[in-house]
Image (tube, rainbow over all chains, first blue to last red):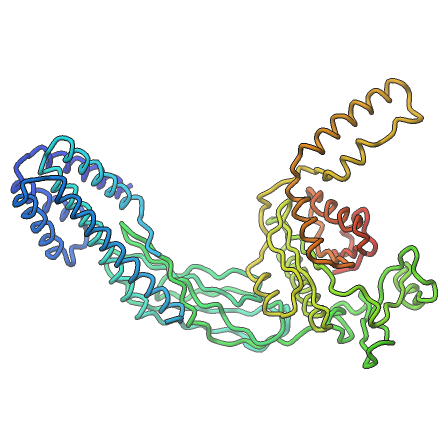
Length: 97
Length: 414
């Protein structure tokens, strides 16, 4: 229930982020919102760096679809790498590797 | 395999929604929000993977079993404790996996806390634990990791002589027959079975007959019917665990005996109207015990609702109306028509599965192990009927006083 409430707050905060309109203000707001969503913030600066980079790409390209497609491809590769790592860990745990 | 939680699914859906809004309304802020949420999930997944690796590599399991050398069917007490580093924000549970030949389920324990439970080892030989399953989860991802390396200590189980094992006196020596083996390959008495119509009367063994109260004949080595089919009827959940343990011991003993006699056997495990497992022509203990491992009383998922099966329905449909009054004849004709239509259109998947299993097993002898629990026994009736159609000899092994079923040739006490 606590997570559900947090998730509803996140949805409301995202509406606020979109409503701000300005990319720089949205970036700062989004960083604060997601940090507030987490209880344990280990490694958060690295993540914040990644969204700053994405905001810079959005600003530089002046487009929306192209950076989103690029990010989708990067995320796909990232999740594939995660799956592979998980598979290797599972094999090691089973004693097969 | 990493599994996203409901929260992670919600964040992903929100990201997709924002991406669609950004594309349609050309809003860079929405694109930033969508991208940052996608990146957020990737980062959390990466962090979960790191935390999981830390937990798994630091995991140690201490397991004490008392005793480690025991007899088949005896209860052993297991004390297990798992210790590992638990990263912040992550919940970890460890599920102990008992040996494949053990009856009883391992508990779920938390790291650092010892848990004690009991198992009953059903098959003789040397065996080991199956390992543990580490279940880890945080707010966004969860994962179950099977660790086989924690299988210590090894257990040695000594057999209890059962009639099927051919070693003489069984667990209930007074109520079961001794299946003595001979060193002569072709002329010895291999065992005894209930008399069937057409058997040679000279083969009747009068001592066994007098003891059992029904005609028994000697089965000569080399003349017996080959690999039997062992059918196990898994009882429902509400039964007595002791009864199930006795049933399991008898099944393991029967399989071991059949394999030791070099005939092998086929194994059919049914729970209500569902065939849980079927193994034709088993020749190795390991294969059979792996199939039986983890079986426990369960609530049937498929119900037959006391359906007698299409063969019986078809028989009733053919029932003649001779000797009945005109009204009864009309009723029987109508009933026959309804039953014929029902028998023709009903797929009867359980019967089809039984027929396929019996055809594959190619056995002439079926041994049914059941507790004959209260409730629907139509699955057993269908099994017996199909076996009798194929001319198989049906032996039922059930607890004393549990009764019998129509079509059974011999009943033996578990």
